[in-house]
Amino acid sequence: MTSRHIPPADRTGATRDTQSPALSLEFMAFRELHLPRYLSYARVWFREPGRAAEAVEHAFRALAAVWPEILVSSNPTAAAWQIVRGAVTEHTTRPAGPTDPGAVDEDLAILHYVVGLATPEIADVVGTDTASVASQLRHALRHDTEW
Image (cartoon, rainbow, N blue to C red; front, side, top):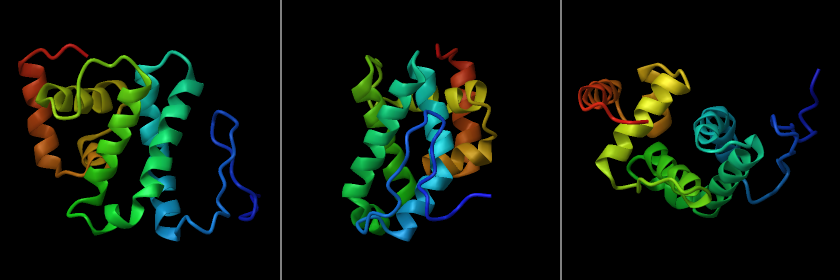
């Protein structure tokens, strides 16, 4: 049985400070929901799991710093995804930038074919609709995106 008062450890063994007054319940819920998928995505770009976890932690610190603005944006999940992508890109020599349309197809292909997420899950992670994800995955396959 797990105590709710003990910060849970992630798979790298690091603990999170869930008692920080600056972190809202909404932020912590968002983190719990998206952390496993963000880590799975980041692990594709790094050989060492610790580096992937570091990039994702960097992203969550950046998200926490702008969380009120994220919440009032037109699409909080999409805004958060861009921060995660940016943190992963910043921590690696990843060639594609966040505004590169090919990078979007590549990310969706990675989430689907490498991480193993279904299109509704991908839509939830990146903040878009399922039909858009399905269309972009078909586009990536047609254009033989190298990922």
